[in-house]
Amino acid sequence: MAANSYGLIATFETVPELYHAAEQVRDAGYRNWDCITPFPVHGLDKAMGLKRSIVPRISLAGGITGFITGMSMIWWTGAVDYTLIVGGKPLFSPMFAFPVSYELTILFTAFATILGMFFVNGLPMHYHPVLKYDQIRRGMDDTFFIVIEASDPRFNLANTKSLLAKAGGKAITELEP
Image 1 (tube, helix red, strand yellow):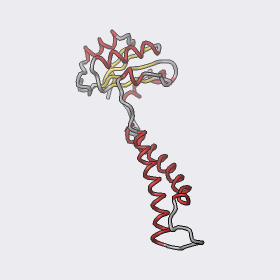
Image 2 (image 1 turned 90 degrees about the vertical axis):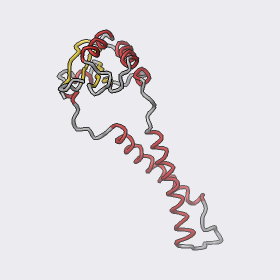
Image 3 (image 1 turned 180 degrees about the horizontal axis):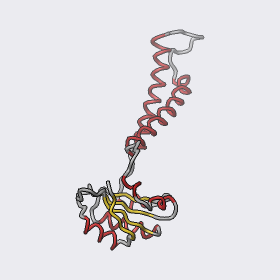
Image 4 (image 1 turned 120 degrees about the vertical axis):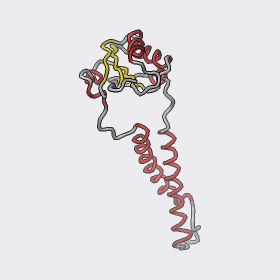
């Protein structure tokens, strides 16, 4: 690991070049690296060896919590806290509690999704060393990048640079922290 380096960044001109380079970096055993693209690239997650996100599970947990909260709230208010028999109707019926539970399911799912995304993505991140790279704006327009961090256990400046060059990377640059 280089002491005064964040890592290396390499430029790729086309999606197939980036895709195949990502497969080579993955196969070389690197773990702390990322691809920067101006638009979503179908299949890039698989090429990078990324697992499926846990955000959908967090969303499901939020939805289930919202539904249970709605049903429990209606049960508590109708059958325990303020029992009132109206026209011989039961003190609690899921049919009457459904609208409230449905709305709380949507609300809790939305909040869980947003909070889960923030947690999983490490947001808010007000600074990232890649933003110091003078060509990074091209990554929002027409160019693709692979960034390999120096914190990766397999990172060796010379070996990593040769891997990126062999994968077709151009303008391989060392990033400052």
